[in-house]
Image (cartoon, rainbow, N blue to C red; front, top):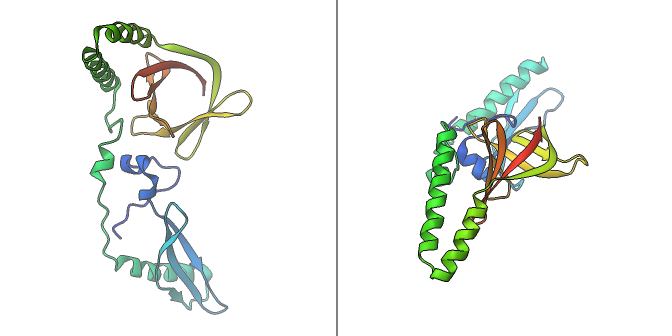
Length: 216
């Protein structure tokens, strides 16, 4: 019917991962009566607002399973009449930090580009600032290690990392690469490098890498 149907435990397309409000949640409203099965399709947005509902599909079949199937198909005919066709949002796709064939080489390339940008910024400052910035850059190049043991718990969209007190430390969202995750609510990602999980954060001025201690 022009829509891409996804289950909650599936890996979402990249534009949907970066903007969950692109998705609509579907539901079936059942207003059946004694001798009539009446169903309609309802679509709600990320705010829980009802933005579309079809006309009722109806069936007088006595067997409920058959009646439900026929009424639902009838309701979907109204949805088909919308003649909708999904078009990926290329602008949002461009914001993604990983692509379907993300690899260790791509991650290294990203690091090199970030380092080049920082070096360019340093060269535009005064000599005094250049010295201070250079010292800071050297310090940033060393990967820190988080000693706290984190436990990975599977979620519909990825994992959540909790400490020993069950406090949620961060939420990881799936990408098409099983070894690259986006950190929800932060300008950061978690990826696997040399057998270890690394958190890479960008605050707009510098990139900080922290080796995580994760127990799956």
